[in-house]
Image (cartoon, rainbow, N blue to C red; front, side, top):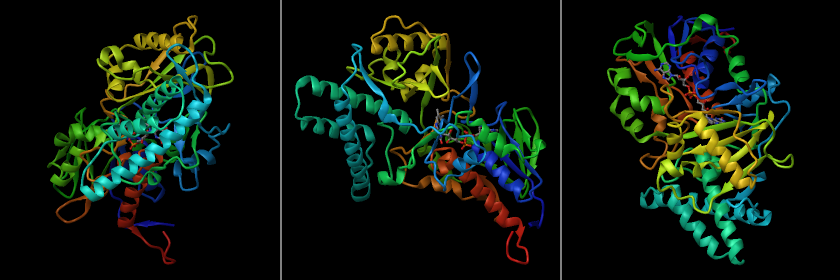
Length: 473
Ligand SMILES: Cc1cc2nc3c(=O)[nH]c(=O)nc-3n(C[C@H](O)[C@H](O)[C@H](O)COP(=O)(O)OP(=O)(O)OC[C@H]3O[C@@H](n4cnc5c(N)ncnc54)[C@H](O)[C@@H]3O)c2cc1C
């Protein structure tokens, strides 16, 4: 049993994982005046399950996997409890066939050795980055170090010329994979902690066959319908008195004792000057300036027939040269490869990151589909592959309410400085008036976003809850 000393008005900006998790925690604790204002016409934010192709099967334009499915992972717990993980599928990036531009597959032994080298080099890169930062206050990004160390490793490989050439190509493909995984060009990204602390995938990565939307719907189940308003973009938060006023683009006004802001780093960077009145404290603005949301997109292609042989489910493209001289001509060299989606064997999913991911958003689905089909013909050595019958492409960089994909460490950041956003911004009397939540404050993934929303809700719960006689809430 819980007793609230007062029923405060809490407005939550954004119905992504962080926003709805915060709302659900507050509702569960007995808060009755909770309102989520969401700019888009749907909930989910960067979780976006859509129906695609013949049969309208679910595909994910945003979050795909539950990283690190273990007892501490709150998203995993929900997915397991509602039976959303059956059949249970763990992703294995090692199982791709690495194909050359001439349509020939690179030998498995070469790929195995390339993976060993790449992993070893990554460890070394992380250690160097930490060393340079802590000992010499020097910030280095991933790309130059990866290139330098991979080159050195290659010089030590004892094999003939063609073996080395194939390995070189495989390593470049692995760099492309890393761009998608990290979420941007590798010369924009650095790290602040040893790699093992970043191992958010312990336990693998689990797929949700029926779609991530099931998790969202489960969280929303006990949130009253009146607590969610869609198509309400908040354009101004007037927060210099005890009661905050929130204005939306359509001219509505709402009052709140507390506002939980879950807009992405991309959105906040662009709009903070007009969104907050008065402006955010300078320290928050400084931190915001040095944070960045990465750029990643997905491409879905549906064909009449499966394109990949039944014995393998994904292919990696190993280009002779991955240099991008002119983004208009070379953008597709950043596509790591294609994998069959679990739910439909005639549908392929490709990932792309960085400048090329952003550039791709200027092209039509049709253009993208034709280029991808040509790539598949080339790398699979099969001129008979038709153009796809349906194409779906995510466009996260130009999504006006997100403006990017996922958060990464940048060279301008001071390690850990984003935690400034976990501290509430207070009114003159010291009450927490603006609280931030979202993926950047935690791990860059759905359960990180969820945990940060719950944490900020807990802060308000602590403020308003009276403990019962037995000391429990
Ligand atoms: C391509 C891609 C693949 C990914 N893959 C994975 C994966 O496999 N596994 C994983 O765990 N994570 C993955 N992620 C990351 C994951 O999607 C995010 O970490 C998480 O969904 C972020 O949730 P959030 O609530 O913090 O932010 P968001 O999802 O961005 O939600 C914020 C919400 O606020 C709304 N909003 C913003 N500003 C306003 C405003 N002014 N007024 C009203 N509403 C506003 C937005 O419309 C949005 O709905 C992926 C992301 C992308 C883009």
